[in-house]
Image 1 (cartoon, rainbow, N blue to C red):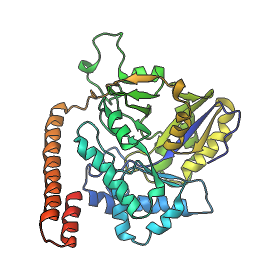
Image 2 (cartoon, rainbow, N blue to C red; image 1 turned 180 degrees about the horizontal axis):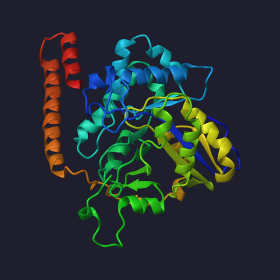
Image 3 (cartoon, rainbow, N blue to C red; image 1 turned 180 degrees about the vertical axis):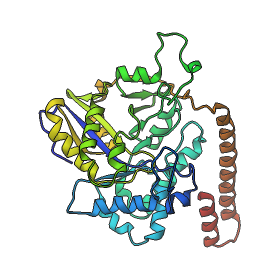
Length: 379
């Protein structure tokens, strides 16, 4: 990380990542192997295999230091290592360059998902990461950039899992095109988004049982560096620097500690492809804009940002029972069926798990058989 000037008014932590859905418009294996070559009014999606190839290549390139990559969906790495089974020991050397954002199998939805499924998502992913010797790359944060609304009591489970902080994007008020009927009838009532914009997008989120979690809302979305990371010809550092400057000028109230403003600039859209231009953009921003803004940019991580603030949380306000659940998507009714399906599936899997435990206690089946049964349940 660049040396931050002692007189810097503030710091932007530029987080290089890529939001890679398990299955969105294609299947998991299609996303991994071939991507999507064309999309209406959107860039093609690079295969996840190529994305990880590029990220690891950039991090291993000693001639171009400074690049970092943050991965929120462990399932992709697990699939990748099936193709490259000897790579995991080499990745141990990427400490302080490669980070797991929480270590979940995927980036989970916290409204639709059954609570047990939400927890097991992280338990399974983190256990896998540790089993291949990469536990030193795990971070204890919850990164949920694409959840369509949030459970008001989410800090309860995050505290129980030992997560020190959470970062999310979507809250009521920043829907792409909310219908007129969604807007509050009382003009004095602000949307969650407007309230956070004016009073700081970083705060301590307190649940009904007293659980408290450091929280950062991605006001400008999960990808403030779209042009930097989707274009690969090496000519977008100036554009990227301008993008970072515009981000600082948005006007939302940032976090603050010891009279220094702290910003998080997540750079990770849908299946974003890594680019060293992001590092160059940080350098160009500092040379062109730092003197006027006083805000210094560094390639950093959300956990670094969180650790700085957790040194002294007294300057952060506390929001009791934040209700960001009512995010308009146009399909509220289907959420009910999704939750029912989730509940049924989780109950069946937990019942199967209990039966395997009972069989292990009373039957004469071999250890390999029980191991195979357990693996089937987990996958």
